[in-house]
Every structure is written in structure tokens, then in C-alpha cells.
Image 1 (tube, rainbow, N blue to C red):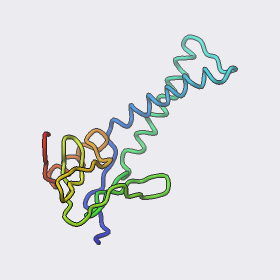
Image 2 (cartoon, one colour):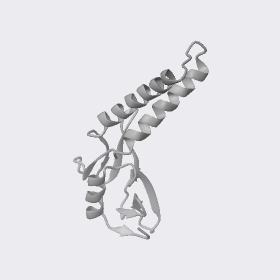
Image 3 (cartoon, rainbow, N blue to C red):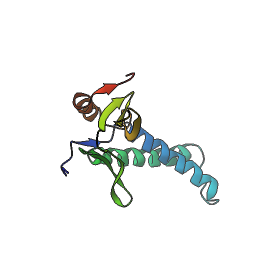
Image 4 (cartoon, helix red, strand yellow):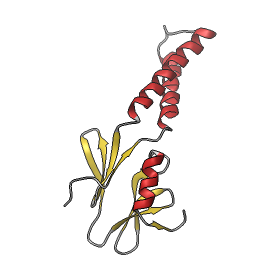
Length: 139
């Protein structure tokens, strides 16, 4: 079993606005839950904007880090308890791209989706995946 990754995957730039929106949502929910936290007018906009900016910056800090690895025989992602392998290949299986996701094509022809999708993977890493893996079905 080869322990070096076939490909290391990084987050897509879509992570930044998603984190910003989540932090803005947290700001609005905080105002509903905490009774002493009240803002009006521009102060409200500033509070939500500051938390949203913090989310965008957090998302930007996460961009260069590897969050998933495609190995010869498994997909590994960084989870709560370190690296986890949700999908493993068995004898006769192979990695393929089906639609906008990487799947394990089983020996009987069925596809098992992995967490690797076009929308959550950096564009340069997705292009490398497309050059490494065969495509099946609709693209």
C-alpha cells in the first residue's frame, strides 16, 4: 500500500464568501439570543460587517491548507479526529470522475461518491484530477 498521496486537495475560493455569510448569520442570531446586544442603524451594519469580514479572513487563511488527499486506495479527509478514510477501493475498483464529483467505480460498475466535488476543490487541483482520472457518464 502506497502511503504517499496521489493528489493533495485544497479548498475552493468559494470557502471565503461562505464563511463570511455564516459569520454574518451568527451575528444576526446572536442579536436574537442575547437580549443585551442591541444595535441600531450603522452600528448594526458595522457589527454584522465586522463579523462577516472575520469569516472571510478565516476562510482565506484556510485556502492554502490541504483538507483532503486522494490516495491510490482511499480518500482521506481531515476530520475532527485527524485523517479519516470514508471511501476505500477494493480489488477491481478505480477512481473516476462522474458529473462534478470523484467517485469510486466498483468492479460491478456501480459508483460510490466521495466528498471530493468540483465546487469544494481548488480549480488548479480539480484540473489535475481531470487529467489523472478517467471520466464516466455525463460531464
